[in-house]
Image (cartoon, rainbow, N blue to C red; front, side):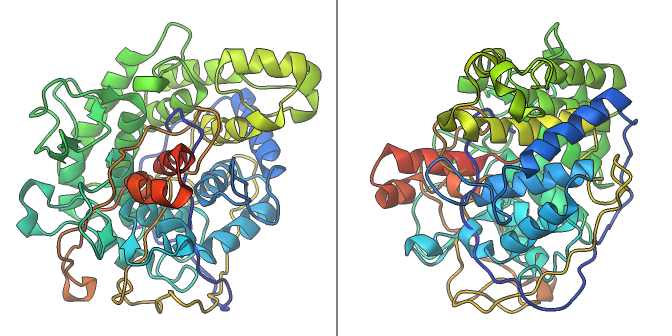
Length: 485
């Protein structure tokens, strides 16, 4: 999604009950035109390479043996291509067993925080992977997400995905990535409440693009147009367009088409896209997301140009040189490709390649986020049914209950939670303020909505992370979690 190669971090639940999990599709989703056979093959090659990077169902981070946000991105990529079903199943089981490791700070000894964005991303990946989102590692992720949606008494924040914490620590870290995952996950598990769609649409400026952060100057901003000099972001717009196309809520399709028009205007002559801020240069992360969104919106010619740009950054046995053994991997940018061909992929840069490949191949496969896991993958291999069993853990809550009432756990993931990474390649920058308590939550059982989550869960908890990591390395970890797929 974003250009920094960081992603989500935590998630700790158990995997161990014998119930077959099934995807719940709430609304009919549009189907994009099929990509060319060449690009489909390139997407499968990229996914095959990425699957080979997993160890025991987990992708590592730059500073940790497991990066849950990146592992989730990988599962989404594998599901989009139908590649390596055994790796996909193992990874899904591992993620289900570590829900709290990803959407909370429990593993760091900081209890009472649940990252909204990470929770929403978990809801989405459970559906995309063929698991039961209402019983994922023992967690009802739909109920958890609904409980994090801001209530009606929060004025213009109504419908926003927020994080939950036992202490007030500053502005909520959730962003447009988080909100998009919330709408996608809810749409695929029973329907997205109108207020969640309305909040996402308010992040769109008149020009058509979406801003990354709903806040301005440290305080909630009513809408994109009310924020002076709002920065419109390609990655956020691509995510928002796909989320809006996943629901038939009022105003969703019109906003999605305006967003797609804006993306078309941002495309470079070579078909590539850049993000915003430090990721404004052409890169495969932004191009992958934008290309996928354009395909979902029916902009076939532009989506094909984006795919051509991505194919030019992919290693093959013919062009790989010293990196031929890593054929299939996609570089973040042309300079990274040149270096790899000359010297191979150094261990210090492998994390960047994993993050870039996971997002970039989405622009080659061109399967919309709303359809991943619902259709027979391009390879012809049907999406396997995933059975995950919960393993009891100290902080887990029983399936069916909204969210742990005792002390909500934080999430550090990509829907907006990042994992630290040494190279800036596939995750968006994240705010440095710690998450603030979300508005009071109405129990889903009572028919209420909840609060708001963040796209990279741990993104907003930079302050907390800084304390934990004792330095800038912690900040990088949080930033990485923010971004996601």
